[in-house]
Image (cartoon, rainbow, N blue to C red):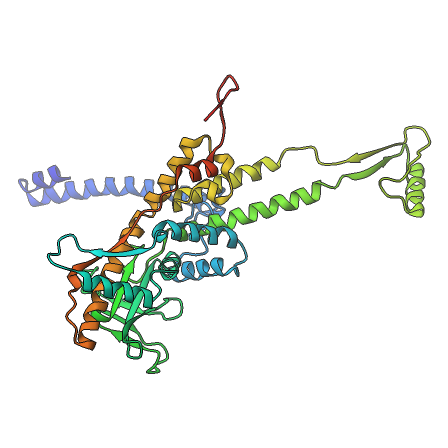
Length: 425
């Protein structure tokens, strides 16, 4: 086409117009023929059904597999909360187990305060104040795990700082997003600079809040950088799998209930004999275990039960779902009740490393959260009570949860057989 246009520029106008009409007429006819062919093909495709998705091809949305019911952050958080509260229809046991294990490995060793490595001078006053602050807010007991559990459900945490005038200390208030649908605001160019935490609610003065940065700590454990308020945690990615695992276990139970009771069967050579046998059984109130005497030609009795092995499909489904949940959340398969999936001790120890690595980001985020918490609380205390504590003197620490060799052996000693049938550690 480009060569044609260049050529037309160097010829008389009349001749150029004739060539242009001839060229476009041929091209138009060619495109029209192609369009007719494509239209016929499209009509065939539109009438078909995609057997892999069970959806018509005319739909504007296509799914591979079963779409998740929990496609929004709000639905994900609500479902995770139901799993932990044991009020969801399916998957409660599995969901709570995953959340608790991840919580234990995130902050299981507890929070410790220490002198900052680059601080020059004596930090005894600051360390003493932090220890009292932690004791006052139960940070040396159960609260770190409670905060971490909430973060595993919501993928984020918001902590408020209030002055307790009676105790003359700074009180920590955890704000659950499920109850107080707060909004975190950042500058347009800096998505990790949280400049406001706001909740309007019903408008009542005692409920709504609009906090400046100095009065709150906000940390994210999931989501992408520019969606500050939507933070799906890792467990939210396997909500469907946890539900399906629970259903598969239930289906297995129902199958076992159905096929574990064999059916007494009497075979008769003809209809009249069969009716006679039925009347006798009904009239004599016969039960399995009582004496049974059958007479007549070709009359026999047997217990007929299920003899197939179709349950192996459910077993395979359960194992696949467990592996998927483990791989996504980092929780080892033995913590989900499937130690038989471990081939040997080395595999078990590698899986322990998996959960340590999977919760490493959360642990580091919590260290930053508590460091910010100590420093902001100390500044507020200085302003409220006229002290001169140095917030740069202290730092937070959370040690990685590591199982001892004895615990590892106790949880994961599974024999591995080689080709000769010998057991190996």
